[in-house]
Image 1 (cartoon, helix red, strand yellow):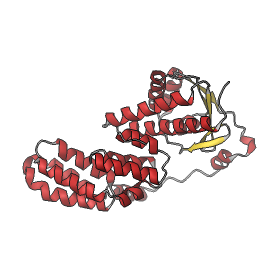
Image 2 (spheres, one colour):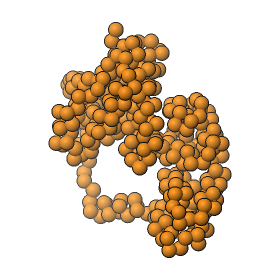
Image 3 (cartoon, helix red, strand yellow):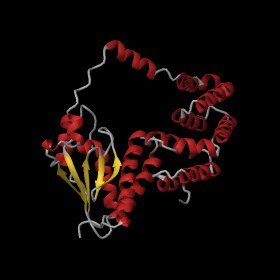
Length: 306
């Protein structure tokens, strides 16, 4: 029996595919937060173990999505690991061996995470394929017939986008650096040793601005830095935590979770993890209420029952 076809099998495979994509996103977006990466990796490994229990699982990569038994499970962008780069490198199928164990699944996740990505992967990508030997998995090259006129053929037929002019590139770079609250927060922390506790009021106003703009990645970073740096009075950290908890009410959390991209979801999760059990409970409840597909994974990451 190569793979299950029942609805239960499809659900477990879908959960495994989403957990694998989430683990890859966590590892790449939060290299400085190993505890997040470890939990996401373990969750994905357990999901892979469950999905392959008693049978192999073949995942097809085409038309911008991962398919199982002819049904799309998860869409991906060309640069979104692990499935986007695999498809871009000409891989059409990823077959997971039957009865994967958690240790083998973790090795597979690590190998996929080490896959070079980006426009300049080139020779590094070729070397990765030569040395891949993916534990518990087999890769098969894409067998699509370009003459079939499928969705991918259509997109490939589009003209290559023109390169931006130097003036446009400069404008984009200027706008990317124009997150003034984030720049101010970093400058304040750089000056912490000189000004110490006197920065408390400025940091509170900066945090208020970050939360008002829903810049959760910077807010999470600022909260963590203030609580870690010994130059700050611990009362500053407590005030920032209290401000953030007040912002994270049920209505706001539902808005953040509904339709969130993986990157946005990790930003709000990182923030919530620093706010204690009560906020984590509200966050888990909000994810369940809006039926977010990563609810189970989020609850496990936060230590809350799904």
